[in-house]
Image 1: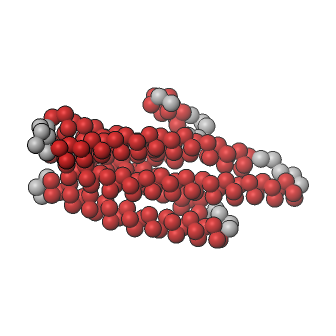
Image 2: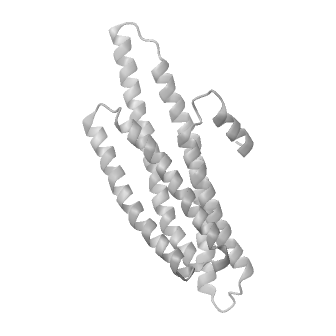
Image 3: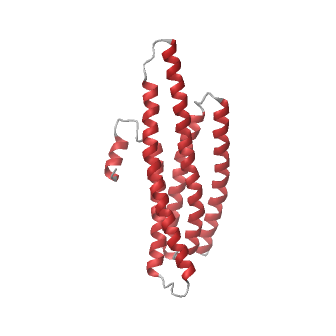
Length: 208
């Protein structure tokens, strides 16, 4: 979907694409910025005597391009699972059997709709680690783009985490909810540590 079409789709009365998809697209922009920073540095720096750094930057750009595509894939998947969840809620149910079937379908889809943003958060974790390496190697003049990439990654995380929190409150199966909450907690711990390391690297490169 083209960017203008996506924005219009988000602004429409349809419930999806919504916050989950927007969070994923934000993550995709973050990776695109990081890739650009690496490529600009490669293009404007003489690495004839430093082939290792050039190879590292090229690899970082490739990984960020890959992850940018992965975020877009998650955006499409979020739209699909959101549509299934809304459809489950809209199912008409008159008899007790129908009500039970509707409730079960909602619960199954809620769990699916929680796994997906957790995958997005896991990708943010990976890319915060990669972004620290980008910050270490790119030209100082392009660090502002690295900072914007960081902001976008954190926005992708926060938006996805909102969905996780909202869904966990609605999941009735305690075993499933606890399993998902444990995954969430582990990811949150990693994000805090990785973001701190990234900030320190940026400040060091800026001479602060």
